[in-house]
Length: 185
Image 1 (cartoon, one colour):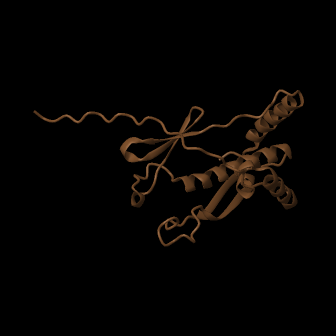
Image 2 (cartoon, one colour; image 1 turned 135 degrees about the vertical axis):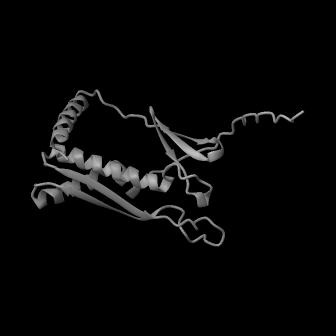
């Protein structure tokens, strides 16, 4: 396996270009959007983001077919991905060499949450923790400084630590017509 140094060079150039565009006023907030739809009889959820699709599903004991990760698992993956990307950004900015990088995120989810008689169990994942495994020849003090910077600027880590207000609404739409059932002659 090759080191990430070549990628960090590319990342460093991209970050310098972005910084120049920011200074010129050519960068503005980017609207984000994701759509989740439920697929027919399987109940699997398809998340569409830009031109990408991710399928989420439940385990069989929750009427799923295990066609993809559940939403709580996906959230852990999103956190791990964001932490990894933030490490790469900060390593590029600090000219810190990295040979390997892996982020593992763990947590617990209690399926009894929301069930009758278990009102005291939180409905969200708990005990979130992450471990960044970084192969680098850099001095441990530089790795420590990297951790502090990553924790200060990682968007999803900070979203989870400092939650945003989320607004919502339910919008009734016309239900699709059911296909006519044919009665054999």
